[in-house]
Image (cartoon, rainbow, N blue to C red):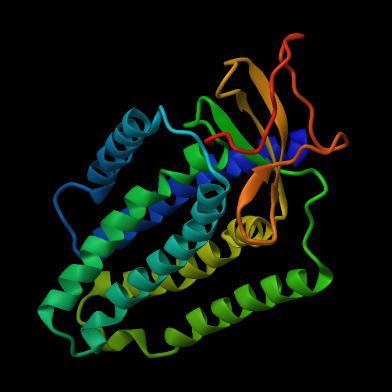
Length: 260
């Protein structure tokens, strides 16, 4: 990932969760009006979740498995959040037990809290000693690009189709307004989540990952590439064209048995 792409993706990861929190706040205000907006409560949830996560995650080292997992979970969590918005908006038309509605409402809060985490993990900001990045040559194939856009197109069409009912059958004006709001909000979320899907596919297909950090033995600056082996394990690549050590002139025994 180049410098410009990294900056743009950083801004995306910063503002996309804020966009989701705004949608959630409006959804809850329309669906369940209160004297005070849900926005204040969600704002405090966002702040507390960020502070708590940073405090508990500051001393960890990133692994290739966590690098791939967080990118896949990010897009899955966004799509699940959309589903919860839709279900919560249409539940008055569906005969479901009360506890299911409660579970959906709790799920919205949990998924919203999770949305504040990818910014720190995707950019490696919460990893002090060892960070992983895509290699600059990482690309999706034309088939994968086609499948990516087809997937999100079908999701948008399906989302719109779920709302092809007469909104006037809903009980209150708030539910009707929420019905129209969530229809277009979920389509917008689906479109804006394309970069996350791209990152998840890129990570899933990765055979190499660049890393920077602190050498576990010498405690000096360390930079190189990790390669996925045939057995599925990841090891530091020792080939000259892919691996450089910046150890301030000190020699060290470089092997593949370091605990990352």
